[in-house]
Amino acid sequence: MKIFSESHKTVFVVDHCPYMAESCRQHVEFDMLVKNRTQGIIPLAPISKSLWTCSVESSMEYCRIMYDIFPFKKLVNFIVSDSGAHVLNSWTQEDQNLQELMAALAAVGPPNPRADPECCSILHGLVAAVEALCKITEYQHEARTMLMENAERVGNRGRIICITNAKSDSHVRMLEDYVQETIHEHNKLAQFVFPYVCLLSPVLTSEVHSVRAGRHLATKLNVLVQQHFDLASTTITNIPMKEEQHANTSANYDVELLHHKEAHVDFLKSGDNHVGGNSREGAFKETVTLKWCTPRTNSVELHYCTGAYRISPVDVNSRPSSCLTNFLLNEPRYKIDGSLEIPLERAKDQLEKHTRYWPMIISQTTIFNMQAVVPLASVIVKEAMTDEDVLNCQKTIYNLVDMERKNDPLPISTVGTRGKGPKRDEQYRIMWNELETLVRAHIGNSDKHQRVLECLMACRSKPPEEEERKKRGRKREDKEDKSEKSGKDYETDKPWQESERLKGLLDREKEELAEAEVIKDSPDSPEPPNKKPLITMDEMPVVEKAKGPMSLLSLWSNRINTANSRKHQEFIGRLNSVNNKAELYQHLKEENGMETTENGKTGRQ
Image 1 (cartoon, rainbow, N blue to C red):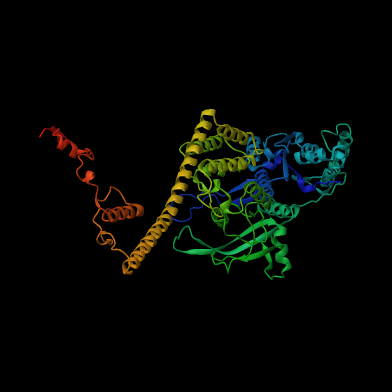
Image 2: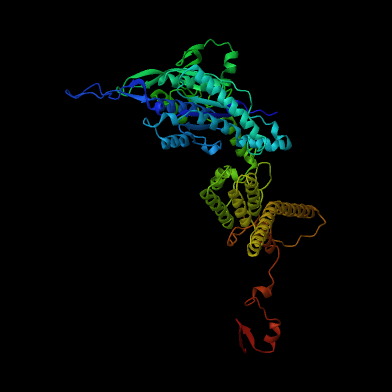
């Protein structure tokens, strides 16, 4: 059986009868200007709060502390009772805040002291409180839905806090009996309307606290809220704060904080002797004392965080509490007793959303290395996106499309790859796939996330002309890569080939020289033909430089041609040719007296 504790639902029933307009007889100084007062000015008389004002302020402090530490699953229903019952809010989570309650109480207004007291009774509010407890909350409905046919096994308990002016003990007992009878009657009714109401526990336990109005009532409710929700107290002592009147001086103050008692479990197990101080409620309530120290960044002096708990100051309106609260909100790095203003469950939920897609190393991602993707990546993890967020995401996607159209480079990691890495088209394909994975990880958050995915997929499905342009670009890149590769191979092989050819020619020249020396030294050998001597590299005539750099082959060819030209007599026809044309059989023409040609002109002898 799943039982909701009595702290799940709390009903406040505040008396609004005419006698609640009476004074609490605790005076408050209204005129605080005791210095520099002009003589002859009569000071303002002190004022006192009504019983109604004291009751409302005390109950609001109870709700404030509960909402601060338990923003969910701890619900309050507020009822005002006079001539009838006035229910100011419901069990829905939207009504669970101080602003709603304060606005509803302001609409009710203070009690009318001239109203007929016989027509007013606190019993109207108690009946409405029992009816409110019989109604199921959203959390109870969820539990009943999960159990289906065993929905009746969901327990229903609650707490009623009644603030009234009881005349005697018999009056108190009458109120208790009336509540017990009302619970019994409503349980009978719940059997016929089970889907809408829930059986209330028939066990009634009551406590009576007789206190004076004013600050005593506020102190009592402060103690009760700690008992009802298992809260503990921690007091931060010796907090230095500057004085408002004297800016150059400072004084030390103490601030008491409330939080769940689990924050002290490990602290109490350690046997530390800081436990045992008295809280501001008196000697019957203990508090753990922590001494303030200036926060430092030295890792040696910082302690590990063992837990995170919501906190609420006891005196929220005091200047020390306000200063400490602002300091903790503005400097979240510093923690006191492991307490944080962010609940642990919410922190876990935020962590889960931000790490649904989380590359382990930076070289495994492209989009998280791109500044252009930051506007989208920062808002896509939200649970609920606004229209402006969707517009920013769409602008980011369009900017990426424009980058791809311009063929801008991407920060693709080339670690572990050979060469230049993937081509530009492949780089953008990797980027789009990763971006789609990120958006799909959060598509279930809201409909606006779906709109972002639709925009992304629409931009990824390119028109046919765009695909054709991409194919042409890929072919052009392949040709450039091939030409560049062949050029590199040719430049690599060319020096080696030239050096091998040069070496072979030199070897053959040496063999010819050696053979010529052997023939010359032989006594029977004829006189060698009149050959021009071989020339060395130094005797080689200067060849006119061709335009551009000359290769080693050109240099060697010029040398060989020059050397060969000196080893034989030039053909007479080539020497007497005009424009590389020589006329044949000139001697025959001269003998017959025929025309001869000189320099391209004909004539007779």
